[in-house]
Image (cartoon, rainbow, N blue to C red; front, side, top):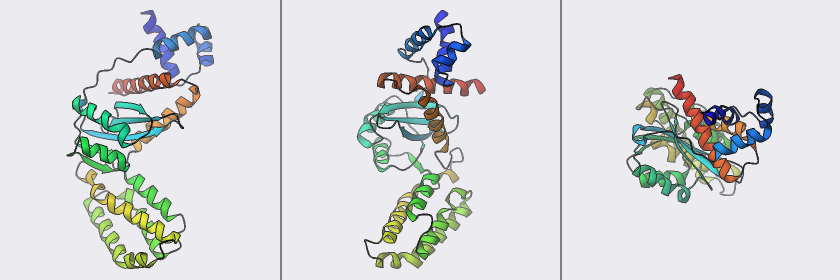
Length: 279
């Protein structure tokens, strides 16, 4: 019972990013006692029961902790629960494939995964779950395309394609999808030859070519959300989680790698606990 009572201070340290100094002021404990409490719980794993087979619609994304590694999460697109996560060297095929295989063995068989479209991650997903539907994050498509086209494109082709990309995140119906597709095809008919004739070393050519490739590769997986109404069109929900995580974690900088891994486990555990308590 004593340990469980002490866990409330650990929870404030993890989930609310209280510092040891702040906890000293609101508790009757010394800094050394609170350090001991923190280290005691960081040495343990949270006891959370999650049945992977229960989750069909998932968000997938990763976030980097400078050069210290990457946290990759599967988050339920409906309940917003963090279903599972891993801390790895980088978000890539060779770092993820074994984890994906284990998750499949443990019962994870999603219908739809919403993700940003990293090629190596897509490769690993399609190798493990070849039948899964991958919904590309529209915000990432828009952001990447507009970054390549720059804020003020020099060519008419660039200006018109940038204007078209601005509409991507506002496609709400099948009619909107048809409208977008028609306008993109019209843009290709109008400007494709112009792009081909541009010198290969010109910035405009590189920018337009990259954006065209981005859209062409993404098109088959851009509009599944119109059919599967349960899923979002972006990975914003998991981006928001990472934003809060980074803000909270930065108040505890200096954790060892092992303590960082344990911190993440407890962080997601307490966040899931808060979500479940609100249902």
